[in-house]
Length: 187
Ligand code: ZN
Image (cartoon, rainbow, N blue to C red; front, side):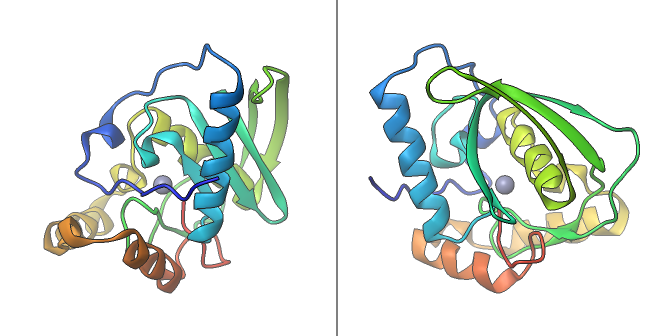
């Protein structure tokens, strides 16, 4: 297994709609293992493949004791919203803002063996699934901010010198944000 470097906002891969996975096998399994290891290394709650520079519809998650991965996810969400909690992102290090998220989701997709996945989630796990699925559509959580939060986030992103950020400092910042999902994890 290997720890992969995390792409930071400004990298075009984060703005690209990821492609459906069609080939299953040992290479895909290794990628998912590496994503799990990378996510654990930075104590992330979730990691989408574009965040490590891979333009495929895959994400891993580790939230509230739930751990796993979803390939080619399709999300259906309730109309009502969850209570707001600050959210962070490994690709936008050092920031945390509250985003409106749906209270409940159902996610379907497949696992690395091509077996079907069908899960329902609320709470932090539901938020994580929404955040990670957004990544696969080239969206970042800061895109969903409005008003003063949006202005503040865009200013902070402009001010931040992300060019010199190493994987290690990303990890440290992600930890100190205390942003994502209560446990101080980022996605
Ligand atoms: Zn993220």
